[in-house]
Length: 433
Image 1 (cartoon, rainbow, N blue to C red):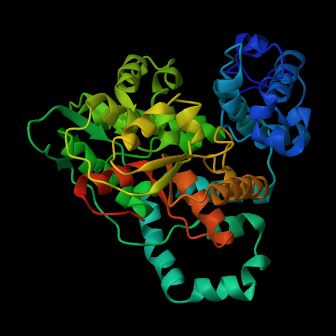
Image 2: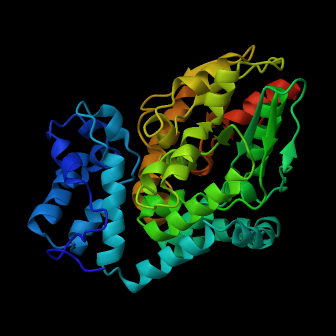
């Protein structure tokens, strides 16, 4: 595909209308994590939009310095919540990153690192092969030795980040292809299983299916479902992402479900946008719109259904960390709190700076570990000040990021998915953690 004016090509460049919608008022500045850290105009949303405008209208080349400002964006879209003009920055940054991946020559090391991530994380089968290796490393004492001896510090920062964020290789739980509703069936819903969550946080999917079934839903979880493509969309790997989106649509169309439930904020924001992503595909455009219209976060579904199963007391102080792609991209903030407030004995704790990203942001903590680490430490400090019994969130990346940050501080505060607390209450299983 030929580049135009040495910068963007004609395939879905960032929309000039969206670029020009920005009035450079600055309301986005205090909402932007990188601007909060560095106070650099080019590392703010309006600064990045200006860079897009330069490349789009003036043919400014995609130099390493130009690309570095785009790469440093977390894509958390907190600026969209703050923007009085309604600029859809999420669409701008995703379109720009796709242009970068097509027209910017990254270093060999960068290409190899990204290739590793994109060959691994969007592929549940490959992640499953990794499980026994990770379990051996963790249970044999090698992990303890490597961490205490300082050997890990000899590794590149990005590999250190991967090791620090690796989840405990605990038992893997398969969600049944069909989980029957308890009592009279109120709805037939599909459940997206995710990639990392399916293989390393499968207890979250199991808790989701149980809670939905307890409240009267028949839950269909096709085992053959692929990755949704969210990590690839956020990183500019457009074609591979769209292939996965088509596969996901094909899979769930055969189930006849009324609703498709997501329990990972980043995945949910992307599947709700399939209609836009596949807008040029004559075979899938309308099917993608229908698919997206069915997609709902687990907190939305439970709140709309209303609790039918009894909620037993959970006497904990629970802090809610709002995942960025839940509160900013999907505009879901009240629903998780509403679902938790239905649990007797539970006390909600609000965290300071809850609108600010924890640094996870898809693969951001693996490609920009220093910045991600600064944000994680900031968030962990605020959690430590609030001193909750448990932290809950609605995204697996946030969950792993916060667990690692709290562990570095020596704070034994469990970090769970919101649905795990709900499930524990329904089953009268006592305090989760």
